[in-house]
Amino acid sequence: MRFLLISLLLVAAPLQAQTLKILVQSSPLAGFQYHAAGELWSELRVGDSLALIREPENPHDSNAVRVEWRGRMLGYLPRTENRAVAAEMDRGSSVSGRIAKLREHRNPWQRVLIEVFVTL
Image (cartoon, rainbow, N blue to C red; front, side, top):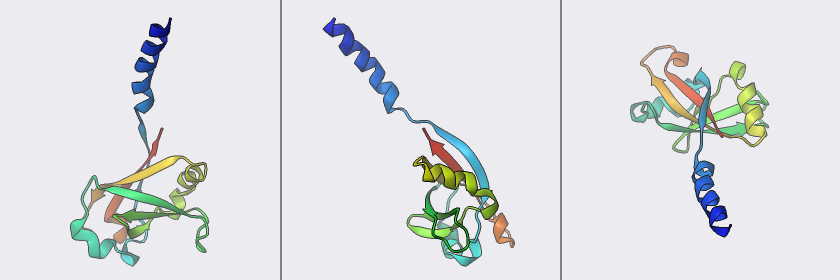
């Protein structure tokens, strides 16, 4: 009986270690022209990881989610698209982002597309 219990634990352990990332949002980067994205443009790469940081005390938007690349602020998730992500972060869910697309464009809203994932 002891052997059977050990076997079950060994089989179950790898399943617990797996994580699943679910794409929940694809959005332009808001505020590109006001933050470090312009000066960092030549260093940014598609696929780069982005940190998403909640700013519930932000005076302009209580659902604000700041976007950072290597510790530097690039901008925000758009106000019109941040409510669900902010709610997930407030519930303690693991949320991350990455650069999905970079594009030379005179409209700053068209330059960086980011993807947002929830990790289960």
